[in-house]
Amino acid sequence: MTARVNSSGTDDAHRRASRNDPSRLSARSGLPVLRERNDMGCLFALFAGLFPRLGLFIVWVARPNLVDNAFDTWIWPLLGIIFLPFATLMYVILYTGGGLSGFDWFWIVLAGLLDIAHWGAGWTQRRQAPGYPGTATA
Image 1 (tube, rainbow, N blue to C red):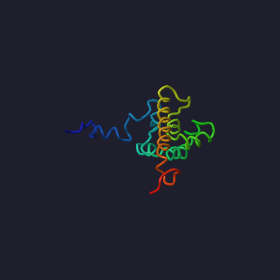
Image 2: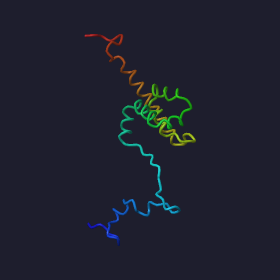
Image 3: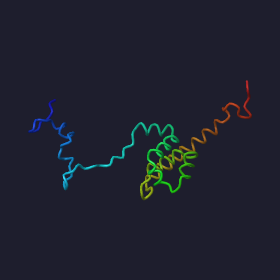
Image 4: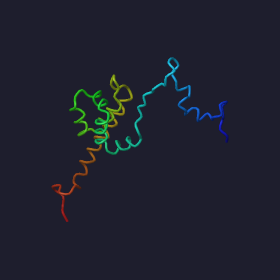
């Protein structure tokens, strides 16, 4: 397959990636248009899914404005890190200036249920912990 070549002798893929591409320029001023990218990396999403407390702490340190906008004081995110890390992390990520709306609450409730399931699983497995009273020693 051959690449399409325009009249200047360069292929279209190179032209689109070029700094001199006219589609990058603003129609009014001719200056480059700066678009805000708010991408969350896949590695961080995986990391935060496995370790939500550490993920929320990293968000709090790296992007304090996200946490400050979502909560009025520092005590709520701190309690969230301790007791409901998934729900707190989801709340911070999904929070917009006007709060949460519609389907956002589904993700918060799902994250809260995951947090409660984590606490429940720990409670049901408590007898397997070494040194727990009432366990028989061999």
